[in-house]
Image (cartoon, rainbow, N blue to C red):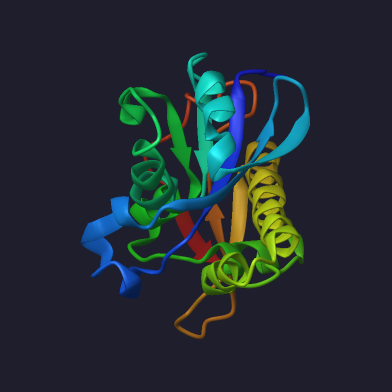
Length: 196
């Protein structure tokens, strides 16, 4: 198994409505960052004040795996990192699906259809947990998303397909993917969608 892979997710302190919209990602701030590191096969979670530990891990140029990570997690995280994160290899599962299907699919949609699992809440719940000082609930929520993202990544690597529920009411649909845990860089630029 390839060892230099990190599956990660962040939760923010603020919502888009708090910072004047999606153009102000840098203002969102990170409350927690959760990850699964294939190097030591462990789940880890860091509060904002501990992010330097994660930044040290990034020095080894791991493949960053996430869901909507290129457009959300990485730009928010960039504020905490002294080098350009876009230079690191990345696999954004949502971006792969968006490029092929022509529309976004949610992590929850893919998790339910592929794994039979559901997210434990929403990003707005995470912000509420942070603001109310419910840090253990916040960490659990973030780690649930990391676990789901890791399992989706591995399912796609093993089975070369993912499933999602269509927001257009067509039920469960299939998307063919082409990446592997051993060679995640060797992926096709497109994903094919089909009815299940």
